[in-house]
Image 1 (cartoon, rainbow, N blue to C red):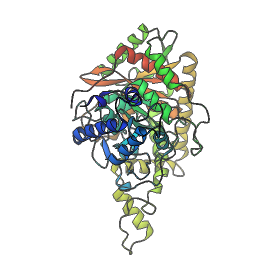
Image 2 (image 1 turned 135 degrees about the vertical axis):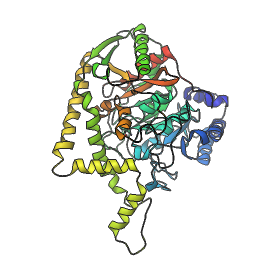
Image 3 (image 1 turned 90 degrees about the vertical axis):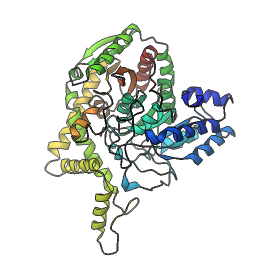
Image 4 (image 1 turned 120 degrees about the vertical axis):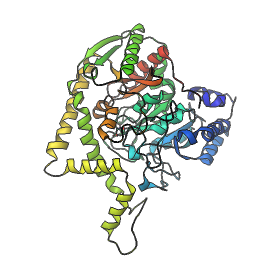
Length: 487
Ligand code: GLN
């Protein structure tokens, strides 16, 4: 493995700016690493060699500059990239090359980052293991027989395996943070509306939030700063300045948390977390106390209803968003032999193009939204969402951030949760409340349990993304970063 692939994004940016290495050399080193390990990891669905080398050459020619100029980045395949295949890991979009870039991709290009390719995921971002990808699962670099989390397992595995220093994920119920936790990397979900959804293939529009994946907190903050900020093309984008997340990460790295109050959610304590996860979490709390933080127990009584509310709201929105995949406008078309009706072609296309989890969500969502059931299911879930938001608001009157394990269990073996959808849904027990509320949250590695990474979650009030970076960086300064065994 080349030294260039071991460096952080911040180091790479410095090395390139000081001309100790060219951006093309950096891109080539990562492409070589992908060639060497991705057959085993399968983090990428598409590698854009030519595009990456051309973007790097533009940096070397001085055409673009900025704090991340020349730094490679991998992008989750649910985000539109002009001319580069974008499938959302679904057969229904096989071969689709978008005619436009997502806003965040435009911003990545303008910042001089070098896009290496598109990463694997659960189909349409529905899942917690990448086992629902139509193109085969991604393998966790820590143990190739285990899941890398999901839905954004490809992005997390790519950085854990040193195939890229940075990656973009999307978090609807935990798909940035849970993969971060189980691969020993950092994953941050910004405040909803803090990063643009324009060009993100919609799953659950009121929850979907793009964000950064990295091997350390400062790198995550640098990527966050590069993509965040108001976008007039997204009606839910927040027209306010982005908090100074990079400054906050650097402040946190000094290891001083005096006066910071951390709220431990009482209701999360007994929720079936593995003992090794709980002990890593409690040791981290002790480390944070040594840095000056104060621990306060808080009660969030409605968090226990977050999972059921999410599994009504997200499928309801998905059933509406996925109606556009009908074989007429783009992607797969099945049965169009001149003898079949439009409805038959649409139905055959959707039958062939969608996988089992996507179909399950469409059926669930259609049912929950149907007249007669709407008030009982979708309407109730929206009321629960309001109660969860109030729990957060009253907790944040007493504490600066809330903390918990990111996920109740470490990376599990392939096949161990696919037979029972509910077992898979439990992976997001601790991440989902934040999505329903809309605030920012980050997962940062906090130790090992049985040789596998454990994630520590920091949840902050909406628009206080800087606060979570500060606490996460402080924890990182105490416990260090994690590196998987050599591949
Ligand atoms: N695992 C959750 C789900 O399946 C979250 C997905 C996500 O955040 N995209 O819906």
